Amino acid sequence: MKRAPLLTLLLALGTPADARVRLGDPLPAHPWTSPGREVIVVYSHDCGDLGDLWGAVLAAGLPVRAVNAEDVPAPAPKGINVWRGPEATAFARALRVGAYPTVLLVQGGRVLNAWEGNFSGDLGIKPPA
Image 1 (cartoon, rainbow, N blue to C red):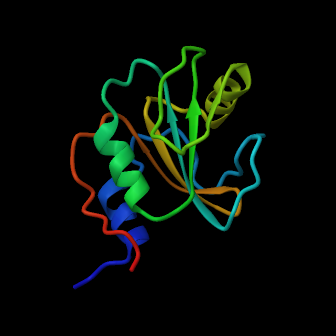
Image 2 (image 1 turned 30 degrees about the vertical axis):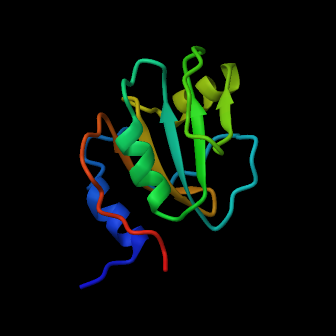
C-alpha cells in the first residue's frame, strides 16, 4: 500500500502524548504567511545532529519553516530560511515547547500534530510524484 507523504509523516511522528504544545491551538505571532499546510521545526543549538530529521521533514513535500530558539545560532538545510532571535524564542515559549527539536504539522495557522524530542530514525517518506 502506498501512503501519502503527509499521512506517512503523521504516522511516523506518532501521537503527541508527551507534547506540551496543544493541538488545535493557533500559532503565536510569527513573521511568515502561512500556506494551507506546513511543517515547522523548532530547534536550538544543543539538539545535536538533526540531519536525519531535516531529511525526513523535507521529504514530506510540505513547506518547511525553521525556528532557531534560545539565542544561539544553529544551521538549517540550505534553502530553508531560519527565524532567530528573541522573537523566535518567544514563539517557542508561547507554544509551550517542552523539548527541542519540536516538529509541528500546521494547517491554516493551527497545530494539527506535534512531536517533541530526539529523532534518529527514517520516516519512510517518499517525495510526491
